[in-house]
Length: 341
Image (cartoon, rainbow, N blue to C red):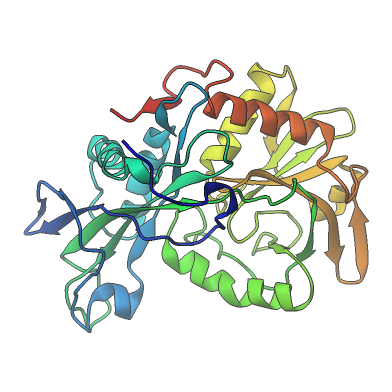
């Protein structure tokens, strides 16, 4: 298929409308068969549950072209599982996991002309989401839902290299104890909007959120998990019931152990020990790993030995290996790479 006339190497990380999207409706206790459609507009009641009480969840996945020209996506089964868990926590009907993966394949295939060519640094971002659509005025869950998937080509998260960022320890809480921090609900991200705008206004790139109960332990940022490297090259990630189980983070930990032979550990990470790590990164779908060079903690600066000029050596190797797997340069574990038929 002929590709769209897009300057692939210079697009940003934003929304570009593509030709097709997938939609399925839940009504009277069952999902319909679903379909690929053209219309990108959604019509709903002014009293739709999603508009009144934020009953919505989402996922983020990427599709891309491998070095040998295949169009693939990365571990969509884990996104399907997390999406179902999010739905159950939000009193929504779980979209069947096998149908979730099939819908991703269908919508990527339908927008094949928008999948960036290999080597451009761009990818096709895939956004599955679900929301309560019927009118609800009393505080209760919806009874009718819509599941949709749209795509948009996005540029590389890094422009001109993976330069380390500066983050701050936030005074705001991202999640509540026993709350919804472990699921991908829209309300979690709404909670972080003021904090991220405030961080940007203060000259910081992101927030470091602490555990909401004791405010002594590292949790995550508004949209990514933390990954730390000790001075003896152990890979450490924070453990908490209110951290989102990142697909990228889990994949990086597997790569660290099984491809690079590094020791890995998921445990509680205390703020007062962060100064002792050699490297720090934020991991997520968009960038794989974004290096952190400095953390500002209420007047104190925590500067990592890896510095502010380039990604630390272990972090760089982790990113290089995982992207190599995704791009087909390195053999992937079974089931990680899913071809778009």
